[in-house]
Amino acid sequence: MRVLLTGHQGYLGTVMAPMLTAAGHQVVGLDSGLFADCVLGPSPADPPGHRVDLRDVTADHVAGMDAVIHLAALSNDPLGSLAPELTYDINHHASVRLARLARDAGVRRFLYASTCSVYGAAGGDDLVNEDAPLRPVTPYAESKVRVEDDLHALADSDFSPVFMRNATAFGPSPRLRADIVLNNLVGHALLSGEVRVLSDGTPWRPLVHAADIARAFTATLTAPREKVRDRAFNIGAEFNNVTVAKIAEEVAEAVPGSKVVITGETGADPRSYRVDFSRSRSIPGVFCEWTTRRGAFELVDTYRKHGLTREDFDQRFTRLAVLRAASDAGTVDDTLRRRR
Image 1: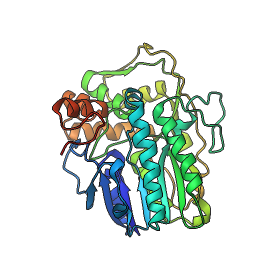
Image 2: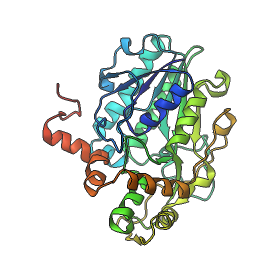
Image 3: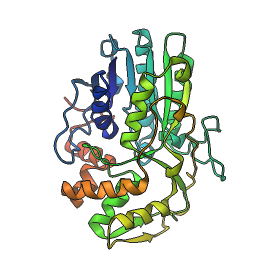
Image 4: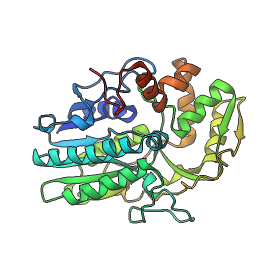
């Protein structure tokens, strides 16, 4: 298949592109390039692609494509809360516009990277499945719910959107993110000797390795249409439903000599939920290999191998810091568009 991969120079896209290529697909990337320099280790070999802001996509970018995998977004809660209007403009409006252009161009399958954060304040002890009420508590999660609703309205006999509700990602990528929970805790432990948890440690989180996400998208791309069209799938595994305190304990095990410090300064986090992932396993080829514990050890090895520094950890691999630095340097404007 000829596949347009948005966000191909991001944390997940950099892992996914080689897997899609290895599966025999012809990948064309589309990325604004805001995080293209957030590289840990050797520079990745990107597929050919377009350097364009998601808000500026045209029909030419989707012409001739068999499928679109849409990863590009303002991708975390702190950033979304800082600039909610941009989050909705990029994550919601630009995503729906891309889908309309794709449908009108004859693209048949549209895999949308949603999030398990849509369950936000689920509470209770039961596992939530794809039919559970959606209770987003941040602009980021709310933007994902809105896109799912609008893509559902676009679905027809020819256009098949699929909603991939990823658990919180972890694991190495040639373009690292240090502002997601496991990656952050491991880096902090290595650099400071402390596994520092700012909440009270009690919230439940579902986690999933970046490579397991990439495998799920690759399998869903060619899954039978009747199994996936206009359906939501939680992407992850039940064994990675863990509390933040448990994640911290696993990190301390992976970083000898480090100690867990639960400050509780941010109090109890309302985002607490455990997720049922059984529906996604009905898709041939979708399965998860990585536990959070194994992922913590892998991250330690990767950080040490490539000499992770405090400056890189705090600045180059933290999305909000990268955008603030770009704004201060005048390389992006107030709307986060790159200046020419």
